[in-house]
Image 1 (cartoon, rainbow, N blue to C red):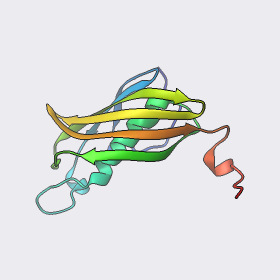
Image 2 (image 1 turned 60 degrees about the horizontal axis):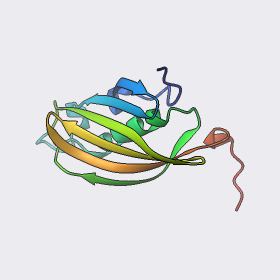
Image 3 (image 1 turned 45 degrees about the vertical axis):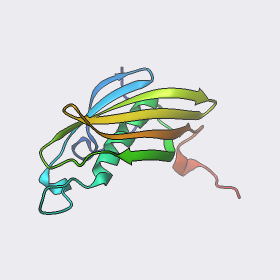
Image 4 (image 1 turned 180 degrees about the vertical axis):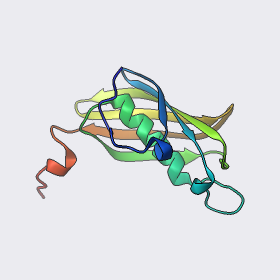
Length: 132
């Protein structure tokens, strides 16, 4: 399945898609020392979140998909050099609102889980007229 969203995203920073099909994606992030928050090699959670967010976006796979909210849990630390794989599945759709479940593992260890609320807009978010 062709990916039609987030075409300019850095796969070095957000992961490489391994599998994409309707309502589902699997994305792998190879962590590096550049992502470490300290001398111990602890990977900053923002990179894991970015991986999960990217997986959610391509599970929806629409050019105008945006993230509205996320309820996430960081379950285990990740260190530089580990590979993390995020699996995203659409769990419900109500109009333009998509709920996407994302679980990420490093090997057999679950390191992250969350639910992402995504919206598919009629046009790109930067083209929208904001009304109060």
